[in-house]
Amino acid sequence: MTSPLAWFGLPDDADERELKRAYAARLKEARPDVDPEAFQELRKKYEAAQTWCRQRAIPQEHPPVSAPPTPRTDDASPPVGEMASPHVPLAWRAVRFDNTPPVRPAMEPVRFDAEGFATAYIDTAAVSDTQALLTWLQERPELWSLRIKQQAGHAVLRRLFRDQPPIGAASFDATLQFFGLDHALAGPDPFQTQRLRTNLDERHTLVQRFEPAVEAWNADPAGVNAEVIYRWFCALAREQAGEPAAAALHAQPVLRSWDVRLQLAPGLLELLVRERPPMSTALAGVLFDYFRLSELATSRGVSLQDLPNQLEVRWLMLPENAERLAVRVRDAKKPYGDIKKSGRYLRWVQRPFHWWWVVLTAWIPGLPTALGLFLWRLYEGVPARLPRTIDPALIRFCVAAASPHMVTGPRVLIGIIRCGTLLVLGALLDTVWYLLLEEPYGEQGSASLLISAAVITATWAAYLTFVALLLWQRRPEEPAQPRPLLRIAFLPVMCAIGLLVWFATGHTGVTLGVLLPTASLAYGRYRARNPLPPANLRTRWAALPDSLFFMGMWGSIHWPPCVALVALAAWGTDLWLQRTRLLWRPGAKPATTPTSGT
Image 1 (cartoon, helix red, strand yellow):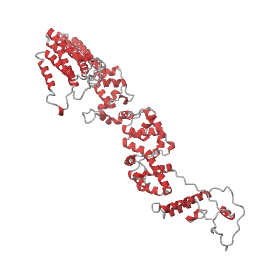
Image 2 (image 1 turned 30 degrees about the vertical axis):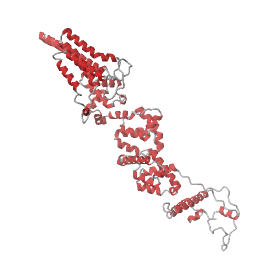
Image 3 (image 1 turned 120 degrees about the vertical axis):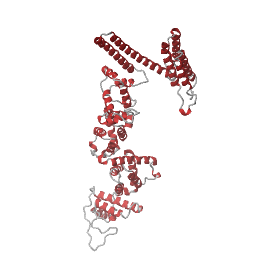
Image 4 (image 1 turned 60 degrees about the vertical axis):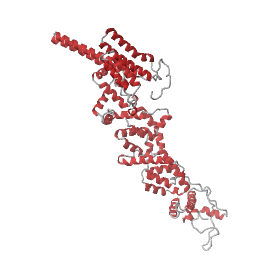
């Protein structure tokens, strides 16, 4: 009885290493891509011989019979069915002399570790070119079985979809072709496969571009934890630009497996939410995508929608990013930013918010508005993006002070401080003038200083009042505003007051002091609530109301009540154009649904 090793020309006591060498030699004549049938036959013989070698390595539970076989003479011919071989094991000889059929060992199918193979493939593909990868695949003995090759191909594709390692497009195409997955009937969605190819190639190209600056670190997975990854990436994000840091992240061998990243993600998420390190939006997006932190946060009920922007604001406030900060907060009308000015404003807003800070900023013309615009452009309309180092009260004060079309408490406070300062300075000058000159002219001069300060204060208060009334009159009908009837009747009442002053006193100055602001409010209300159509749709009569308004204002020089007529005309025209939207009481609804063009 011969052993399965005889088919390979090996003795019965040959080990598995000698079998593999013989198998590789036979494989040259029976390649799977040349003669699939011969390859299948070769594979069956190899598996049987491999099982034989492994069974021989296991000690026998029942030793062979103790009686030695009867020796044959040299000229005696061997029995039928037995080959003359001096290496036949003793167990086989015992079975032969008992005249019982030989018992072949059970042949177990060879197990294939698909996940282990996929891991080995990713590690090889990430550091090899296309030809080296193909050579590695062709030399894998387990892939010479068509069944195992198909299983391995699907395992590799699943891991590529999951782990997204940096692999070039050429290597990816060669892999699909090798495993027979490069056609529409292979199973994977062609569109998803194409997108996977693009993602892998982009990461591979990024790693290749910055290969000299990329170093693989801490290759032992047992020594990697969330704290190590977090500290390393934060330092990298501060020292490097977006693309080199992203390339370094994709190039780490220990992070190529999604299982490892899945274990690290909760710790990373906790550290990011708690410490909020400075980091650009691009790098934060790379980190979030690589560890899928957004999905993890959603599953835990944590909102990370604006966290990348918060990290970028902190990153822009670093001293090394002064140029980027200047570009972020620059005036849209200017092509470049002012680094010195933006750095000075950043120091101002990081000071403690006290009463002396308010007084100091109010004394510097334009500073409160500049600080408010600086903060607004820095956090792009979302105050929560600013770090806790900036007082929220200071943020609210500066932004409110920078609103030129609103009457806010900070603007009123700044006006009061400035007007009060003028009054105090006027009193001091009055005292100094009197003490130094002691002449009647000095008294008149000092009195004029006080009068000028009072006039400036009154003018500032009148301006704030006018702005507040203008904003109130310009509001649309919807959403519903409080006290709508008072807002509608305000302008006619002011016109009536102006006319009463005119007929009672006949004083032109006082009358115009009442009627000119009223007419301005009426025209502002009309134009804001009924804007002109686009220039390409504007007719020749579109500007007629504006012309009549200015003509009436010019006629007021000769007859002040003409201003009241102009104001009432503008007010009445607005009521007519807004008739379908007018609300006469709180909670009321428009008479009809407004249509476009009204």
